[in-house]
Length: 350
Ligand code: NAI
Image (cartoon, rainbow, N blue to C red; front, side, top):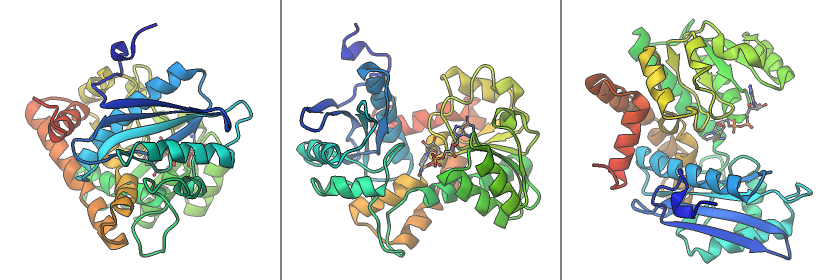
């Protein structure tokens, strides 16, 4: 059994906190990667982990990703992540959420949570009963904050437009063919924005009915989930799971651009080089998918309104351009360049 410091995913995290509460059955981890730029912010995942070890690895990886994402989004926030191990019955009881809220509060504001996989805005309201260090709460229409999905969709849409401009030399998306893997909260919103801009869509989801219904509504096509990565499109947009870009999938990708919302799209660091070697323009995931954290981060910080959030989301294409330009100048893969810029921003670079 390795010590925490020997885990491959341990990256000089400032703090890794294990919480348990016998009354409610809570077992949770909060990993704080860096507070160099501000309180460590990142959502909480509620997941049925095989064991505590798997949950710890997830918390370590995801919290570092949040440091990079928040730094690249220009937010005065560090990076952290919460994971709650789903109990045997799979239920998020009020007592469990309250215990998790108290756990977050005990960190005194060093960690700020919001929703992630398995958590929704009602859960954030429950947590808010115990701590003020939570965002992603329901808000008024003109206010910053609330469901991060729509702002993530907007950022990915703007990032795709920038990628199309760079790789295909086109200023508009009319007739540009985008294949979207996963049409849930973010992928579904993205499909709507792309359809409104005149793009041609091919959609896939493990929930085949969902993809078919959206394709019918937007005038696109639906394909089986297993076929989407190989579609001959201009843009492949992974908006479902992580690790979809790997040794097996990359050789079969037919699109010259990969730009989507899913977190941790690259299975390994070597996959950044594999994409680069194939001359595929890759939008690093945590740069293009920062719209949601910009939205909830500004809610927590009490900065500005929805228009201000949209203005900041509008800066995502410029950050991607910076990464692509440095990638072209140095010959390094875009993902490697993004990591280096983020590390410099949090004071860990060379
Ligand atoms: P969601 O759960 O609403 O949607 C995911 C969709 O992908 C579902 O419709 C699901 O059926 C589908 N799916 C799952 N496995 C699939 C597969 N193998 N092939 C095709 N479809 C599959 O999740 P959401 O919120 O839309 O997030 C999507 C991705 O974006 C996740 O990786 C998430 O971590 C990431 N992300 C989400 C943000 C947000 O604001 N919601 C912010 C930043 C990243």
